[in-house]
Image 1 (cartoon, rainbow, N blue to C red):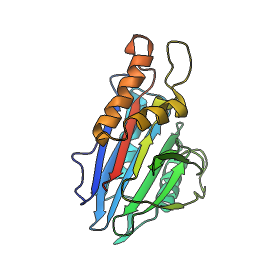
Image 2: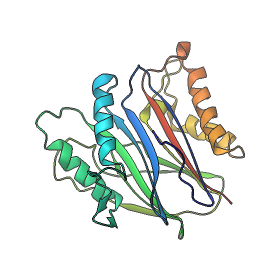
Image 3: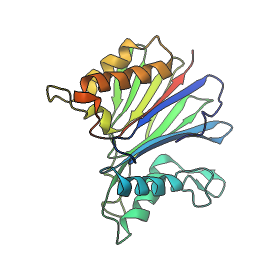
Image 4: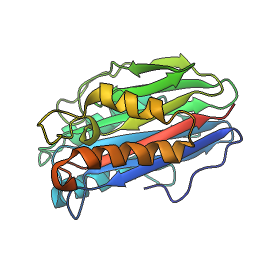
Length: 233
């Protein structure tokens, strides 16, 4: 988990994380890449418990800007998200003992131009709120670890002041209600829409409360992770 939110003027971040077991397989982070770029990701290892948690830590190690084994740079150059996903996939799919897969969404935002560059490996779509409209940023390649040599497409989108971005694990949209229905994308949008005037940390708390209230016995069936990024007006 992030130690603290990186400081960029006009950018606010917040996150929630709740494992369904003692140890979870989800992970997220937000960090400074240089004075003009902020990076952030959410990853989800298939399953949960000890094995998923160990793999989550291992993958996160390669996604840390402070690790000597980081895949985020080549020399002093910041690598594009699709290159990072490709390197991760080759690292883990080539390991003979690797029999799990990882979904991941990774984005880089340029705080000067407000351009978001992102790539996804089988992960839930990023939810983008702009001008009171919600849009799911879909697309991407397969999960990490299935087949080496995969090429992940890169996507770019121009943001504006007042926009919000939400990355999340499928423990949110696939949470089961007391009636057996999925929490789903539509419900997620509705909850976040109702909290659009509230601070982003309260919007995340409201989302988690809605999931808990809809879940029988308030017991999660999967890990829950969510990261929010807001461009202050």
